Length: 87
Image (cartoon, rainbow, N blue to C red; front, side, top):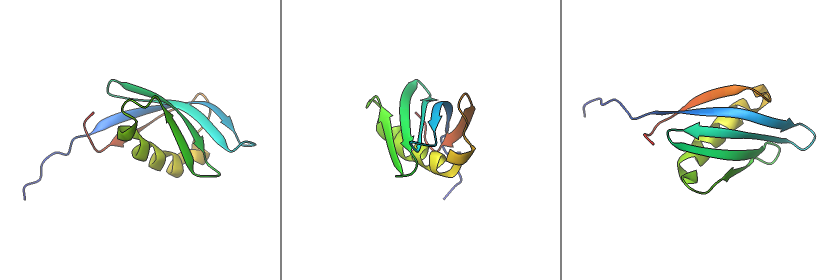
């Protein structure tokens, strides 16, 4: 099996609001020509992503990024992670 370059897309995350009292982070994520808003309820491990168009492409990778990084994220902050697919 030859080694091919795996397709990748960079996803850009902006944190809009964070509430430790409610256990919630809100933000936007953009990848390729898609843009979504999300709410991450980190105490319950629940992620809501809108709109539904293309949501299946970002839901799992965004969830992994948020689980790994949620305590380091700050409102107004810009972050990025790599999707192992081409959007």
